[in-house]
Length: 314
Length: 314
View (cartoon, one colour):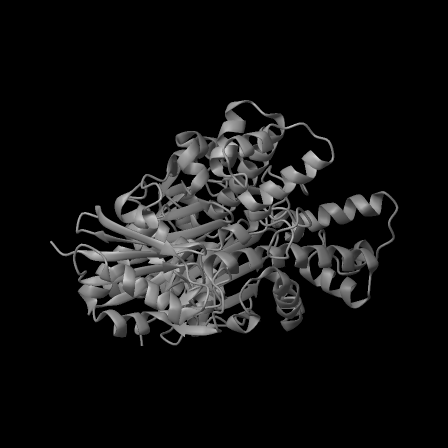
């Protein structure tokens, strides 16, 4: 049994854990993501790994940005990051074991594929509904990262030309309807213009600054009208995108993960499946919609799977 | 030098030609597509092949419908076709050489990839702008057909939720804006409601029943207002779709083919590239937009390439 460290670098936190051959997660550690640039991020990762119960035989990393052959370009949520950083090579030098790096959404899809709701699929789309909307693909039985490591931007597929403003500057992206940040902006605008909603009371009651997935789940459970409307619009945008991707790629599985999936469970996948059916050309028994099974861990599990592959190939 | 027969089964005609190792097209033959069902279509293909200058060492076929492992399901434009037909096996029995069958749009993309504007690409989308809008993919250096052989339905990706009515029954598909049949319907409605246009005079002048690609090209060349508007809408729909696909799949090449591409040439690819740039997240020097190089032949060349692969693997 060899242990591999899976590292999930986010805009806010870095999480790290030991993962065994069966993709089971053992000892784990967490720290705030440094804001002083790549060297500080690398130091933080090395410290986290050094503090684990055992020294790992390899390290895999997921990071929110395009990754091409271990080089990370322009991660939008990491501070002071120059154009290109050879993250895999620099971490390898620092930890002395094989290291592989992947985009966080791709790595999350990989985690669900090797050890979650994607097991047994050969053509899978993973959709991550969080602050934004991310995606990852497994095509023809292999993780798919595209020509330059930038694949998987499901959230920035256009489903409504000229539609809602997206944080990326474009209009009509899936994320403009189904990203939590966009949903919160729309809810705030509606509320300020006089629309009644319990969303903000629930937020305060939960002691949160933002409309978290738990806040949305409670408001939906209460039958709040605005929350229900915005949830339906989010589901419809994701469903139109899923239908388009199935028409283009002929998938056998769609896995829905992220905060909202953790809170709503199978209901979310079922709602998306029902809304996507009218948009898909192939019969719906050719593909299944499932909710992610590994909770917050697919990023760590997928990163560890990348690291394990690097170890086996090294 | 071995010769392979490439067969392009269309809703109207079946075309067939001998193709050599260099993907050069030799002796060719053509017949009307029989409307009496699969047995008559198979007989027609066998007759065409039998009439060629030399007996081919293998046969490859492109057909407008989903193809899974040589089995053709529900081709919408072929008459009296039951649910599933084992076309590859039945043709193999009839001609006595290896036979492979693929979807026509996928096979066309394959033709441009092996011997046209897709040469050297590893991540390519082929877009076919004809009566409808088709697509074919090469991903990670291999032709991509999806989980059940139905991949490539680029024309039925949704770019405008709730938008124009598509022939498939859905709304907002790319084909509803950029398919020649849809463009003609829209032009007719505008013309009937009093909008001036030279499109129908040019059609009559060309002695055509329909607004062919040549008719559109002449009207655009004349600066016809309605033709220009509908062309711009078509370009925009394709461009939004291309942008979405690049964001999802991180391609290195987009090849635009079909009747309109033959008539308009590089201008069409340039117009799409320009319109797609605002919708893509990656820098535009990461991917090229090119017009198909093999005219009406990529289907025959791609089919022959499939047949050649079947021969080498048999």
